[in-house]
Amino acid sequence: MNIQEYISSGIIESYVLGLASSEEGVEFERACAAHPEVRAARDLFEKQMEDQLHMQRVAPPREIKSRIFSQIGMEQPPVKSEPGIPLNRPVLIQRSGFPRFVAAASLVLLLGSILLNLYLLSQYKHSIAQYKELLVSQEELTNASRSMDTKLESYEAAISLIKDPRMAIVKMPGVPTSPAPSSMATVYWNTNSKEVYLLVNQLPKAEPGKQYQLWAIVDGKPVDAGVFDLTEGPQLMKLKTIPIAQAFAITLEKQGGSETPTMTAMFVMGKVTG
Image 1 (cartoon, one colour):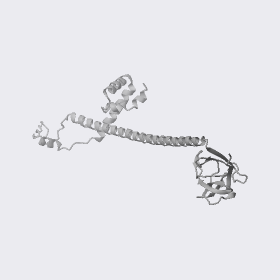
Image 2 (cartoon, rainbow, N blue to C red; image 1 turned 90 degrees about the vertical axis):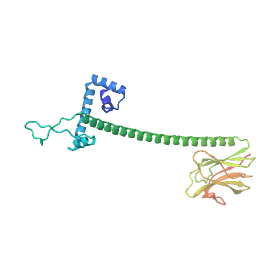
Image 3 (cartoon, rainbow, N blue to C red; image 1 turned 180 degrees about the vertical axis):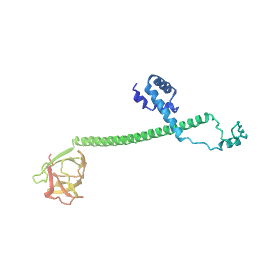
Image 4 (spheres, one colour; image 1 turned 90 degrees about the horizontal axis):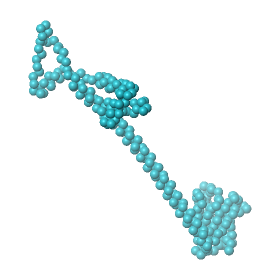
């Protein structure tokens, strides 16, 4: 047994204040008999409690005795005089120690109740804080799980589209005059439904107030196929349906797109084969 840890565990206060269980009381009494340090700590706490009670005691008024006898309907017994002692001389009467014991016990119980309530309040606040932390952690895990589920569903849908044998794949590498020659994007064009899906492999972040725009080249003329913004991670974006096209290209235009492409801001382009 670590004596210092046992002393500082609060068992002494619980025992002296009458808050310890019967098992704890038996164990404490054995520890007092076996370890002088425990017994000395108990005696010190009892002395501190007694000193505190002495400091806080209040002397009763002198007339309290008369009031007590009056309330119970009895006359106060006369003070017998002794030879040589005047009747009006104060006589010291030895009082019973029971009222002092009751008052001391009441103060001890009051102090114990206060200490116990403070301890329970501290434990309650600690439990509430832990509960709130668990709620926040659970909410974060739930949001992360939902995000992963959404991404997984998006990837599965993209793979299903790409594997469709009716899907024509148009790779669009960076053009020689591209502001970012290493740019790359891929168009997946369903030759049956004419739906167009775009996968951005690599494009620089658009400037504020700008937006990327996909163009379909039909008989040598650009046709608007939709504007889009870059998203985190690979994502297959569905744009406008294009019935026929010989090529596709991407330019950087003003927010909302343009009626005609800005040729100096063309990043990638690719021809439809097959």
